[in-house]
Length: 335
Ligand SMILES: [Zn+2]
Image (cartoon, rainbow, N blue to C red; front, side):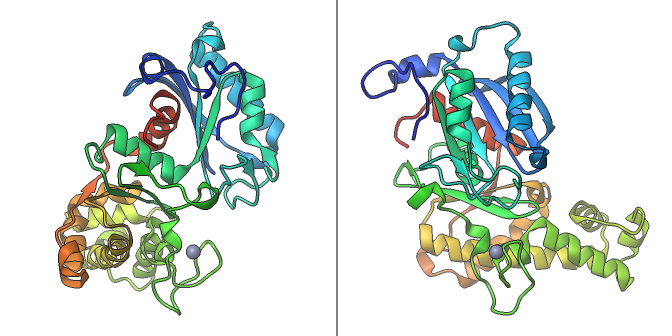
């Protein structure tokens, strides 16, 4: 769905060549951080970031976005830009681009994000769920390039994702496909952010690894974590550092994390049949430690034709979503 006026041509979109020549305003609206960038082709020209603070309400949020855009544009007229692409914490119904009960964006209920952005900028606006946008970014410009079928996972505080199937971005009903973190793994596992128990996210997200690290701190199982703790707190990064330093319990926690990731990815491979799985998010910082364990589970548990599907690290880091948001405007073909 496209919001906005002044779109040339009856289809609402200029030709591909025209679009690729332009510069897009990309917005990544996350629960914690609000990031805005100017993107041309596969390059981020300039960027700005601030706290999202969704509870301050929609007017304050849109005013912040306006100021960030003004600063980045540096006097250029908004009409010089090809459009605004936004990736948004979800699940957001992209048929209406209205924020409704998004857990990480309280205070924005029933806000018409697409219509309001378009009204303020007078530019075409496209909005995508963050996991799907990040999949698009990696597909166009990162570790998914050249694949007709790929699955993207972001593993950080939660687990999100997106898929490209038969050369098209998978959106699904309401544009919310790919919420892979809420795949049920076990009937009685830990409680998930969604309120259910035993979701993939509750077992394998960075926050789950952090919880296991905190438990190890309490039981004094890891000399490394005991030394790394600040004010009695450790997190997933400390576990990776400890494993690199040879701490036996940190190595155990990494192996356990790889097992959970491997199990979830194996299930997803059977559903989507990707030729490649791209892993992003904060936990991908430990990819070198995790990849062998993940692949071991896939080789052990997957049906034979799926056993050789490679899992690779995302190439764009924190920028997968921003680049995908820009692609919504700059390269909308075949999506
Ligand atoms: Zn869940």
